[in-house]
Amino acid sequence: MQKGRSTKAGSILVWTVLVIAILSLAAVETLRLVTVKYQNALQTSTWQEALLAAESGIDLAIVELRKSLYPQPNQAWQGWNNQPGNNVTGYELTTVPNAGLNGTPVTIETSVDAPATLIDPTNSWQYYRIRTVGTIPINGPARAADNPQDTKLRRLSLRFERFTNGLLATHALPTDANGNPQPQVSRRVEAIVRPVSAFDEAIMSVGIVDLTNQDIVVDSYDSNDPTKSTNGLYDVAKRQENGDIATDGQLIDAGNAQIFGDVATNAGTVSGVANITGVERTDFYQEPIPIGAPSWNSVNSSVTTVNGNATITASATQGSAASRYILSGISESGGKTLTIAGASDGSQTYVEIYVTGDISVSGTGQIVIQPGVSVTIYFAGNVDISGNGVLNGNNQPGDLMLYGIQPPTDTSEHVNFGGNSQISASIYAPGHDVTVNGGGTNGHVYGSMVGKTVTMTGVSNLHYDESLGSKGMINNYKIVSWFEDNR
Image (cartoon, rainbow, N blue to C red):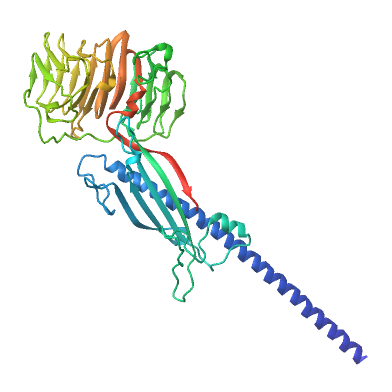
């Protein structure tokens, strides 16, 4: 009887030990699987975090490029190596520490350069190349997850650094206090950004866009493309649908306009639109770059003010002292004319004019731009032009560009065009209220308008010349190429 009990107790003990062993093995295997899955999830998260860091480096570079467009002092590239200079084409920000996953420090390295091969031959605009590396340590041991292919796909640096700074031989990772390698994830991204013209839309306003007249048509053409224009001029039979309208404000009163293009607001609305061929967006915002007064070392002093008949002579050399004038004002009325004269054979010539005061053309007064002359006017005051006040002999909006110098914040400046049956000009005045009052059913505007507010009335058509997208002042930078170097 005693022996039976002993045998039974021994069997229970054996089964107990066996069950505990099995449960222990199951617990160990469960812990192993959980650890592996946790490691895999952690590596996946850090992999994504490193990409976000690299992409942030691109954002940082674009911010500095935009800063460089502002009038001096603009504080562009402060804290970066290779400060801008006449012969400097590269900028490098070595580290930007930031907090990533669970407070793990993230490092962003950004390099910006301007290769000569990335200059647009049509307008000499410089494209920039941005290269960034985002690096974040991987918490935990330097071992692969359960799927080796995952590690190969993500290119994790568990023992050796992948990026060798141009050296052929790899080098070991940094180690901790115990001499153990610190695994990390690094992702490298390269982007090419291109300049964006101030005249990238048909209409752009900081505030309200108001097309108050009925049945205004906004469309586009391309004076450089014979399939989209006729002899470089607008042809309704070749109408294009890039007459885009945008505002940083929250309302576009389209006045029952027909818009052949996109309409974009900043979380706003569009009212009174009979037809929009493109898309309507509510996520638009772009701060216009303010215009500063020109700082020319020398100018042509043959004309300093215009009040009556006068002639300004263009120069064959763009940007030369002979082609630059500073005027205290322009006032033409009663049949008086300011003639901007070019070459007798109509070949290309250039004029830049800085008007420190107001521009006023009224009655039968005129500004006449002869064929072949490309005119850029900077103005610090108001602009009031009525009647047939401006005759652009080239009929190209890219040959008459008007830039409003940013006024003081406590003033209200304006640009008013009224009574013209035809206007060929590009207006960039983000600190001015821009109003165009055309000639009723025959009114046509060819070009682009940027203003603090933009109002059109009595004008039946606005035709945006798409070639303006590669002319004039640079107002922004846009990514045109993006890829990840995963070697």
